Image 1 (cartoon, each protein chain N blue to C red):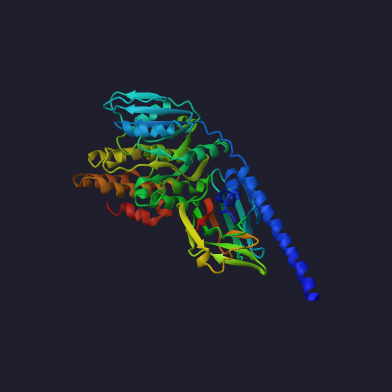
Image 2: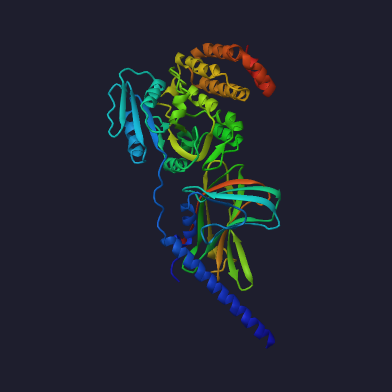
Length: 176
Length: 345
């Protein structure tokens, strides 16, 4: 299996960042195929997003009744991790008020899927700050080396209103 | 056997579905990766006005960056430098004797032909975010000025990024801490106006400044207070951007205005006069007094001890007499503030 191509992994992120002025509302697919902003259908919340020039996305939510999840999802063409030691991501974000997010890799299995959460939570506050996360296959027994499909998910707080700017998000294979 | 019959089609279906999904994701990603980068967006036609006094090296550094950023014009005002400034590809104005950054900025503004103006100091640097903001503003609806965030070198030296916490607090109070481009409702202008770093953090509509005769005061320190506050008093539409567009250098060892510690710091109270004379609305009065108390608290920390008694006396006079006609408004909005104003009298 060839080493994963980071440019291809990040292609939807690159595409959305280049779409200056795109905006929308509600749960659903974003205008870069492979990227979704999704909310728990059981929640009563409004969700607005925009993609300013040079920035991945800004997300604002208001909550009437909290849900169980709210997620930025990136489809990954990464069925085989055997050529690398794992997967990492780099995120630059800002939020006011400050918030905490989690990131995970969801891998398809015969029975459904398995989620592996990155070890450290992401703190985002008013001044833009960077976060990196890494998940190694040999230290994450639940992360299957081979999977029919995978997703990267950034879990946003579903229970409180947020104003979040994600300046950039990049995924990278960790060299073996 | 029947279980196997049921299982095989289900597994086959899942396999086919997974294969299709993988092929689809791969095709999409490859298409994205092949797509051309977007063409450079047109920028808001903006003049960069730079006052400079004996700071040729840092000016050269600034111009090196600015000349590649697509400004409509760059105007350098040499405010009586000992060795006259030489700069190419700019409009160069020279004062043979130093008049201060206020008159230098006013002289530069008088020569601006571009519809928008950004003042920047010679030791500051525009960041790539500024180009993004100017591209955003080129398609924005008309505005009087756009306030943006900045990077303070003291914060950067501590390993962090962005503007001082005191400034950030006002952005958060205004509910505008996040957002590449936001319309700032007039109700929060009194919060935003209390930021203590300026005037290089705004893109102004040039005619807005000239039509309202908004400019720096002719004083030796804090000349830019009037420019900053009068802008909020006269504005009809203000935008904000959380983009950090300018790197602002604080050099405690340089011969900068902000490092002056002598009796000239008393001119601060002259710099407040145009703001008081403009007869601001009650909310702005309260905000301005808070601003003055914060500013004078800081100013006391940089002043020589021998000048503090005179400074304190001037402050008490300003709080109790100069703005005495504001006291009713302040008592109604913030009684504790009025108590603080009159405590030293």
